[in-house]
Length: 188
Image (cartoon, rainbow, N blue to C red; front, side, top):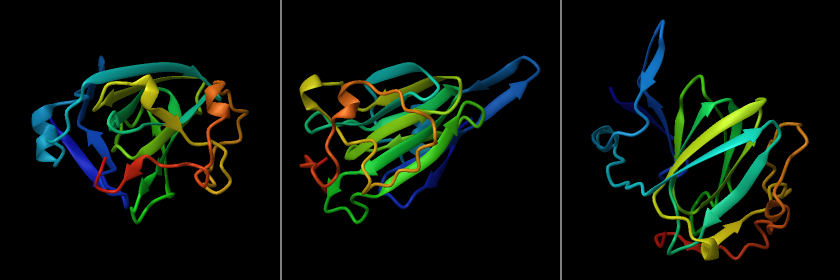
């Protein structure tokens, strides 16, 4: 058992493919194994909170982040369904500041993505329903929550053409040009 890791052009943002063992009964896989994470260079991660969301088609959650000292890294996966997953680098001084990572993640391929602190994250549900699981490296802190406008034209995120179902707070976040990012490269 284990994981294979694929790098992206963003520092520390990686795609993981767990080993999946299937037969006529279904399948088995490990979502997290500390020793296997060490083997792929992610042994420094410590997860302290798991979150699960159930959403219907068109639900768009994000783009969210937690500011320091409560910044969170997130290990995300989709248990059932499909999402368009999006992360935006908001680390001042990073070569990729303001760039967008976009990937479809679904319950069939079992891929996982680790998004480090310093990114705003969100997803759009593409299937009828979705079970979305993410492990966090820090506890949620309401006073530290922030976000980016999901429809910021500067980010040019290729959301699917599905009417978005948004929370009230997600309708009012600033654009990247308006954001006073709490992240300095090297301080997250």
